[in-house]
Image (cartoon, rainbow, N blue to C red; front, side, top):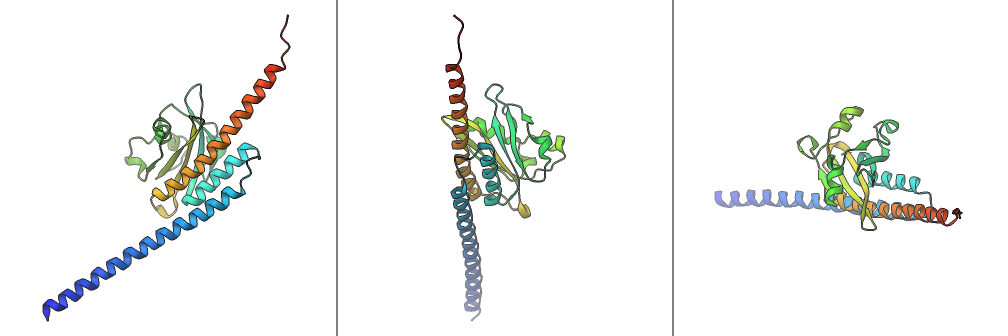
Length: 213
């Protein structure tokens, strides 16, 4: 009977572990489905004919919602200097001071994303050699975790969307990364359209110039 009792106890423990694992998988799937629903609704409400800056700000807002992040920023690449410039900011950080702030070429996790043209997750930034602490030090902010993805379009990198500090100190995961990548693709299309409009306006002005004889 002793061996049989031991076997039953082991089976109970095994079944409890399987049950706990299944509950975790169901919770993860439910979160993914909920996030996809939010993302689908958000994209369906975006109007491509709207002015680009409010549209990009809405994309950044939705990036925070679907990844459950506390702060976020959208940085664009300066073609001439290769610096990344803070174009939009959401969260507790001081927007007025941070907007326009420039990251040196290749610096920080955002710089790594641009250089490698791929997303990344850093759930412990202080232990990550790619982390650039100057922003935190300059603006009195505390970054714990970062998820960043590139904004691409027309065979070039336009910039990066970063989301920071997931609520309740939960780490970012691959589902968050996939959702952010979808929003970055849309942001790339918006920036493509904005650049095309600027090029068309410049071309129209050139055509209207009366050159001296």
